[in-house]
Image (cartoon, rainbow, N blue to C red; front, side, top):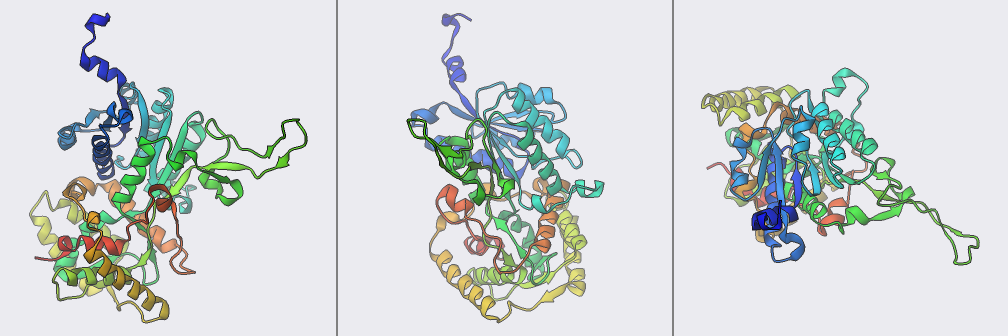
Length: 448
């Protein structure tokens, strides 16, 4: 092509640096794409952000017209074919957000490896993987265990760790997404009940999708983000969270003087590679108490009962919720389901009056007041409401069930563990707790 043949559009396309987001069919993929695109729009006056664009890979672009209307490139791929994936990676990629959350049941590992190997073949320099919290707790020794989504995330993390050796990568592990609680609205509306398959003492870890968006955007758009540059003594880091050495951070064990004399021994340092994006864990009774406070603030005059369900009961409920947009009969089925559950579910007493529980109750009450008067930016926009029919795929339902399994296996002594400062370290503020999420979005949970 001669210089005279170059058009402004051709020149611009050659300058573009892409943020590529895989598995845009998923709720997570779509919300990440919209947030990063918004961040680029806000930074258009900055030279470094002027020539960046978002490209989303998906299996069915007909479902992502709303992304195209926002100026996001949507490219259809066959995840079974490494060739079709590679074709869409033949651009200048600044960061690939690897998000295997829209997997076809039973094919997550195979399709996920195809994406990673295509990225390696195209020499993608930086990968942000969004994985699942709890991968360290899942066994992969039996064939039945391998079917669990969290176990499959574990295998994909291992593939990334062992095969992507010549670029920078980071893994964000996320637990149960708070916005999934919108799927519980019919349970609340029909029977003032918050039911989950966890016991009275189990604690559920959650994360707000806004915190995930910010953490991913910072890592995707800035190579100066602490996730790419932060180092600390290797002895302070869990072995599963680091990769010592490598092209972007060789381990250092000593320092020498200019004359070559004996060096001073220094501790080995490493780059932290795995971050856990979590907020405070709460028990089922605490969440019901927080929801009750939120609904009373919204004008409700009733409390919410905490109900212990079985895995089968919740799975049936989520499958019915997934059908509500497809069939009017599903709403009737949910009504029948909730009536039956009331006869069998164990209803928990309100949060116990121990000194610890009383302290938590006072904390929730103080945060309820704070959330009702400030932090308006925590309220969810319609973009963040997950569509049940599209989001609650068989894979997503099984992943949700895995999160409750992790909660049942989590040690609860001392209380409020595990804890993590990763979100605060990355974005500079504390994560959004689920009780604040309830309060900020109370009108969406309040039965009309």
